[in-house]
Length: 627
Ligand code: COA
Ligand code: AMP
Image (tube, rainbow, N blue to C red; front, side, top):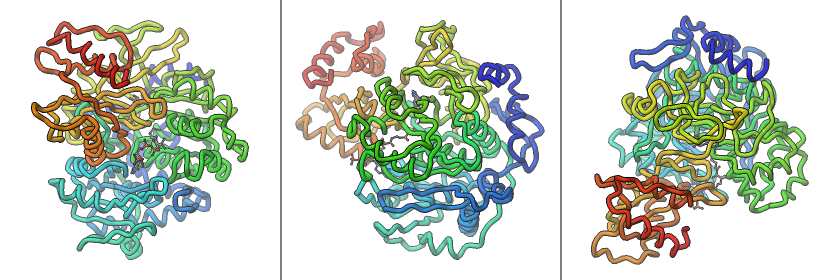
């Protein structure tokens, strides 16, 4: 079927279309209702369906004869280790860890926080939770203690699974002190902590804390349990416009059906083929395309603990593709910018045979045309940008390689994926024609896998995403379509910034900066960066009488943000200003600041308190070479 026909069908007959996709997977009980709305008014897929995501990803492949196929390849240049797990070996480990969790009292619906680096046990932990019907919440290992604490408070886990350390290039990062601090900071105290001891650094366990190896070995394997299609599989926190992260809830049934569809229709993957997403299990890309998508499809998934460069060099990616015969590779453009910076002519590629590679997928941030052209020139395979969000769990726009590979265009993630009725609208909600930039929204209902709520805060879900344009989901991104319907995503319209493919809220960073004793007020905005895409810049107003130099202040603020949010926020720059532009009611005009810093034309809003502030700030930013 062509893309156009499939897309049309998904919009005119969504229930028929998705029922067909649902039949591509086995069910314990097939859903009695394909689509309806719950008591909150949220659209729900596959009500009445009974399944288990761990069974779908692991056990049923063993039952179907894939037991000896490699399910997971752990490739870790930072520890000089490569380890393979067949589906049967994965099943044994997952069943035992699930048994260990059950011994700690974890049952269906209980939450388990996973704060781990890129080790196989992180994947095993996620699948073990799914096996019991428990809800995992994976927290990216780069998050500092306060961020971990706020997630522990929101998810109220019974158990935290962690590891003694992560490895960043050659730096060993101790996790235990961060976890200890988070537990002190959090109001909720998890009943149990289980610690995976890594050879690079052993953690000293506190009384009552469990050693992973002993805990797993002594556990009795646990079977999977039947869960409802609409039961939650996981909570994944993502940045919103305020400092408080939003717990995106993912269900079991819709997620399974959408990911299984995407593996074939978008990534063109067949069972037994090797898929590699070089992200982190702490992000949605890691959830969907390191763990659940490839395993759901019976593929082999690569879990890479390393970086694009210096592990050991800028040929790291090519080495992995060759060694594991990767067919589809998925990574954020920022990673390729790092490779390009070190190896502009891509000379290291000549050392490797990457003929297994058929597609290069990129996402997480806008694929800038220079990186697109560099990849096209050197890889000799289709370079496919695709656009998606934690909220959806899979692509909103893509070039559907498994359905009908279309021409790629620089700067565009191609076309809306079946299931997404995408519109570009102005502030009044009127649909805009080709070339006109506006808010990108999706008409309800969103397809399977899209989140039905925010954990513990349904009001925030409705207010943030559905209030501005009733009946439409507000993506928060702006963009346009060209004459042929290709979509272009230009950036966020809200206070979310994208730093090296990491989504961060400026509010979250502002809260950290405001902790400094000399800071009266601050605004954090994203500025363009050739490597990271965007990096945060702090505009800081000092308290009267504060006696600190800008250089010293900057150093202290950098340390504060690293300690409060994490080093990956790349907060490195702060500029002292005399005043911040505000409305008469005292709200900082962030959008104006954003546009000024981006060098875009901006209108001075009529609500501004004092228009003289804008040229004053521009002058300071020019003097500091920010503009
Ligand atoms: N744990 C601890 N620290 C971490 C970390 C982690 N998991 N991840 C990053 N950091 C630290 C880095 O060590 C660095 O510290 P430093 O300031 O002391 O040197 C800092 O955070 C900046 O990190 P980053 O900007 O990520 O640079 P990097 O060189 O470590 O990694 C990339 C570069 C491209 C590999 C990485 O940014 C990346 O993978 N981005 C894509 C993210 C992604 O997958 N998004 C999802 C969409 S695909
Ligand atoms: P996350 O939820 O962390 O995956 O981040 C989602 C946000 O990243 C989106 O709202 C976009 O702003 C940005 N993003 C992701 N993929 C792309 C892409 N292919 N092109 C442009 N922006 C992207």
